[in-house]
Amino acid sequence: MAEPLPSTLPTYPQLDYYLTSITEDIETICWGCGLRLILPSQAPVFKCGWCGAVTNKNSSQHDSRSFRWRRFRDRVFVYVVIIFMLFVICGGMWAVYPVVFSISVFCGAFHSVLTCILSVVTMSMFLLAAFKNPGNPPTLVWGSYPAISRHDLDNYTFCHYCKKPKSPRTHHCRSCGMCVLDMDHHCPFIGNCVGAANHHYFISFLISAITSMIYVTVMSAACGLRVLPALGGRSFNRPRGYMSKLDIVSVIRAIAISITNSEVLLSPRGLVLIYLFMASLSVEIGLVVLLWQQLCFIYQGKTYLSNLSSQKEEETGGEKDCLNLYRFFGFPTSALRYFPSFCNSKKIHRK
Image (spheres, helix red, strand yellow):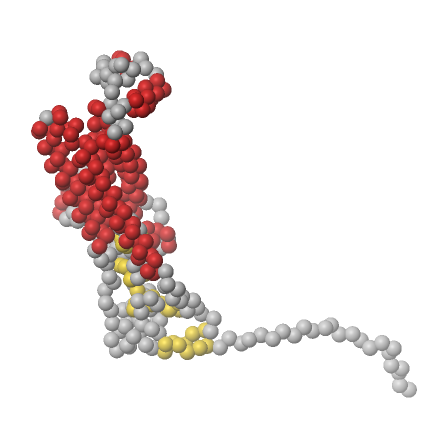
């Protein structure tokens, strides 16, 4: 006799079904050597096993419509800097040298020669840094397998702007519209990139400009104090004990009142002296900070861009030591023995 069927059927767990795509390998061509590569479909960045060229699928050419605007902006900055330097030179000679020559003819002639030397050196270094090519990367053969040996393009990338290979030490500047070897940064005040070919001129310009600004600050202050009338009926040429008895606030107040009541300093010549002192002091502070930053990067064997991208030490130019400064400024290796021993000793750095 057959058993009766159960009143309820057994329930089974509900299964969820998902559609998944199966990744397949794709075939592409290496831009460096022209060989065919088999890659996973989800590989945005890959490196050729033969020539070492790196391909980034995500990199694309950005809009370059603002290139003309950047070039126009840079040229305006360059002309403004040139006009400022010419004003400092000409205005300083017009405002300072009547006072200097009133002291003695030798003093006036000495400061005239010194001014000419500083002006010529500063203007020359600025023009070389602004208008010299910052450095083109070397021309390489690429795209053909027979001409490309193994690892010839190791870690090279392709520049979509210049349509040519770009070494790890090369960066493309969209303001200049070119690839620059050992690019440090793009400086709008010189309207040019700072690279391997003009980095020396840029550092020389900073040093000469700082020296010139210090000279302008000292001369404008000395001439201003010389033509400044007496403070409260008294002259500056007083014993030191007289100045030590005055409060600092009283001295500053007396100087401000003397400048306000002075017909000499409120004349065009006096206003130029005051402007030269304030402008040169502010400019030299900014230039000192920039020079210190540049020397620190050179000491570390880096550039500003490589420091931002946190590249490895072997990709940024060598060891961290004072020898990097000597090599940058062109000191021969044989001359290093004449420097103090602490400069030649190797330093310990934390990596």
